[in-house]
Length: 216
Ligand code: ZN
Image (cartoon, rainbow, N blue to C red):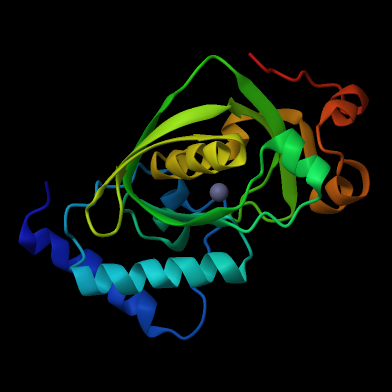
């Protein structure tokens, strides 16, 4: 646990980040901050600063655009992430991927446990690895626990794409990138993904690129 003396530099660095206009700068793979386990949040930012930081994470996620953003992705090593997904995808994609619209959520000190044995493999990307996508098999359903930005407990079972977002963002808080879990032979540029692999499932990509789809 941090002493009050230790907290000041973190709050100061967040104040400095928020002093700039516009979206925060998203750090990219190769920056060690993406490889560190972040500190549990225990009041290092007071409630007013936390509210401003969360608002900046949200607007940065919208501007990117992305459906999730973790504090280390803007250089802040705290276990805080945001997610929100309007899910503007065709119906067949929505059905195959379970990509249903998600309201804005703040995850403070999130963790999850898996619900059931099923996994689903789909292309995903990361704002910290721009220009690339790869297939990752992830748990189909998870029970998310933690707190929201007001310290209220979170305890919710999510499935489909929202479960994927929770796993991806929680991984960031542990210094894990999606590529650590990806089928590397699926690695595709965003252009190739758009041109060739926009199908609802990655079956055609698996056959053509030569990787396995782990589903259980
Ligand atoms: Zn990411």
